[in-house]
Length: 190
Image (cartoon, rainbow, N blue to C red; front, top):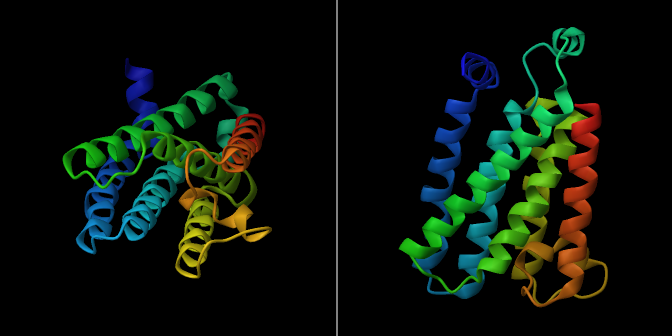
């Protein structure tokens, strides 16, 4: 248990969990104040992106060179950490939806968490842990913009997948691709 405790402290897990909870509790209900399903969904996407982005800061340690020299199998730990972030983000989104129902389907919450967590992992692998939040927030912002500008079609659909209905297969493919690419890149590269 001591190793897990040290890992969590070194990766800033307590602070990340606090920010995740604060983001979801503060942002997700804001959309419900308007009475608009679109705004509820947009704020849910933004809350999930902020929560995932905040947690992704802990996906890499303070000294990557030191981590590379450690005689530890990092890929399983990286995968477990990423799954834990996605599970907590999904649980928080689900709890907020149960406490303050807005009609957002659970499938949409699941798809968004999967895709945004993959984007966060990709951001950490490509940009570093201090900028891992960029990809999820850029996609969330693009999705909100697409939602506000009308029903997106064609190339705009690639950016608006988080705000699309759950029964649209293309959105699942896009979220799955982001999840797979981000997860594999992060687990292998760190």
